[in-house]
Amino acid sequence: MRTTPTPTCRHPILTDRETDILALLLDGETTKETAQKLGISPKTVETYRGRIRAKLNAKNTVELVRHAIENGFIKPTKTSS
Image: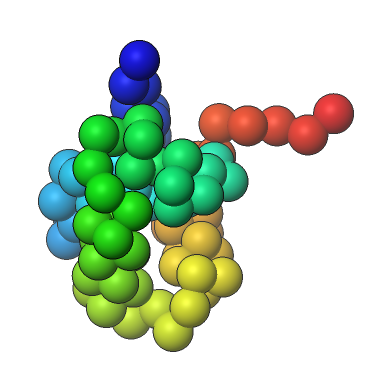
């Protein structure tokens, strides 16, 4: 069963699919898990992540996550207890 993430809002320069990929990344999903949930290949997920990093001028995933959280575009849905 596929599930889609629930972003708090859409990023003005990311596509809907890129926003979905970013939301799953923020939820801590691996490339393989993201691919399975969205019904795409892991290579496609990696391609999307690269495009997202380029669009947001993020050198790595940590910068990407920081950008998304600081700008309120997407909030992680998992919480720690």
